[in-house]
Length: 279
Length: 345
Ligand SMILES: Cc1cc2nc3c(=O)[nH]c(=O)nc-3n(C[C@H](O)[C@H](O)[C@H](O)COP(=O)(O)OP(=O)(O)OC[C@H]3O[C@@H](n4cnc5c(N)ncnc54)[C@H](O)[C@@H]3O)c2cc1C
Ligand code: SF4
Ligand code: SF4
Ligand code: SF4
Ligand code: FES
Image (cartoon, rainbow over all chains, first blue to last red; front, side):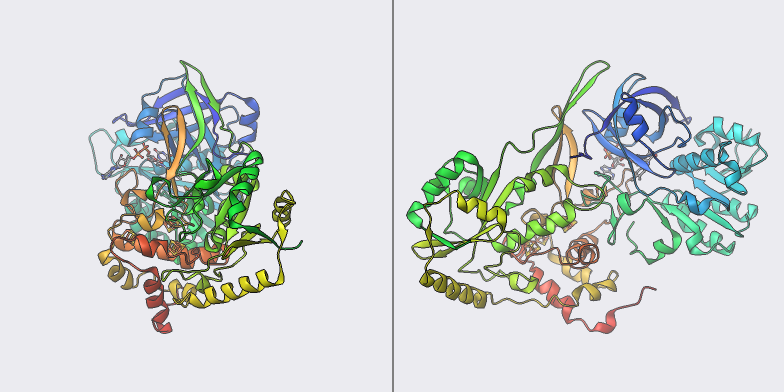
């Protein structure tokens, strides 16, 4: 019988510090068993349970794109026991990974449409996966216009600067990076994500919006999204709840009868509106 | 297969024979709370008392369970899964309400895309022998949830105390196989069966507390923001005892300890249950946590698995330090006018 609680063994191949505060790092992992790597088929928006043996396990969104075949990446903010243990690990350390879990983004619904990605803070991880997937040369023509609106508190807190640089050079992405308030030396956009979204005003025609951020960002972004004419079923949100098992058994991540780990973490705004307000 | 009887004095012999082939779990009074434990000897079984304080769920979901062990070296980690079951197992004297809890747990833990390997493996290798209740307690309300003091759901064999003997009724094929191992068992006589029937009828009538469950799930649909939760939770201490002793509550936490990844029982009544790493908590007070417990049992589980996640065993009523009575909660919900339901669409 397959046992979903036993993780695959992986090795940290590379660690990248993402922000000035140095509390966000990207970990690139390779599977010890190449079969396990092949079996780890994921789609954008899914997550995995990461083990640091001796510290425990926690759910982390998959930050790499499914097109990256030889390693997977996770971008992790240091907050508690497991994430701190992970931050203290070095390249070469053996980690556990089980998954992928959750529904992920409905790629078949995004194909043939304009995609508007709206992200705030370090919740940008699975959106980065999505953007890189769409921008991959094997996929780009399956999607129409790609608009990305991404904001952080200040320039030092922007993650994936290397990707942002690379995207800026392309003409097949409308990239809008913003910081909360002006600082000397910053030449880009200034303002909160919802305000920038309003200015950029991407068309809702044949478009799907994918929104990911802290609860406060949802609160102010959703009215703008609606104003732009996106109907609730064309808006995708990704949720974070406290999770342990990741597979709908430990009982803690539910909103109403839905388990966010198993039935989510991606829900349409329409589904979300029908859910009890408990998140 | 015919029904059998065994004289009470012979029961230790039967358990002794059974122990040669099976690992046996049965109610004992060790640790001063009645619980299901692995038997050391046949005489230890405590069958006369009321149902155990601790439910038999820990035969399948131990309070602490090792998921795997890990050995960490410099650049190496070795994982080993434990042997979940050694051989065939029998659980003796499970009351009908608790037997039904296994059926509900199966629906949850052994179904869906991911199956709980540890639970399923134990269930697969375990025969359940029930014990009918002749003397229900005032807190029992199994009959309101589709059960009965002599219910058979979830059982392979049912025993019933008929004074000097136990009547033995095979229920499933697995149960018949178990009984066949004891060719010396006498066949039941008409009088034994009649006596059992009479005791069952009396027991059924003795379950005096009735809760009207019908329609409660629908009513709860519109009650997420109802003031009732604030009222009910006033005296609750959020101690989690109701979920700890509940035969169906199976929520768990996962952590690493001394080279083991373990899971331990957890409860939605604790504030840290849903506390996010950011400090945000979607269920910050007793109100939300009480709502979760009631909603989970009488609304969410009905939606996902077709019936209530409660078997009416009454343990949460007996053990609650502030006498919060789930029957009164459900009763109060059921008594609310239907027009309280707001349509969510
Ligand atoms: C689907 C999903 C995807 C996710 N993706 C990512 C991702 O890509 N990157 C990422 O970094 N994270 C992600 N997370 C969040 C991540 O899972 C958590 O940050 C992680 O579980 C924290 O684990 P920990 O063991 O480090 O913290 P724990 O030790 O479990 O928690 C400690 C934290 O709890 C809080 N806490 C403890 N006690 C108190 C108290 N008394 N009062 C207030 N607060 C308290 C503190 O904030 C503390 O930091 C995701 C979560 C989900 C559900
Ligand atoms: S046992 Fe009683 S006091 Fe304790 S959490 Fe349950 S209802 Fe509240
Ligand atoms: S909720 Fe109470 S009565 Fe119902 S099964 Fe659990 S402990 Fe028994
Ligand atoms: S009532 Fe609470 S502890 Fe019990 S199973 Fe439901 S969520 Fe878990
Ligand atoms: S994380 Fe365990 S049920 Fe969702």
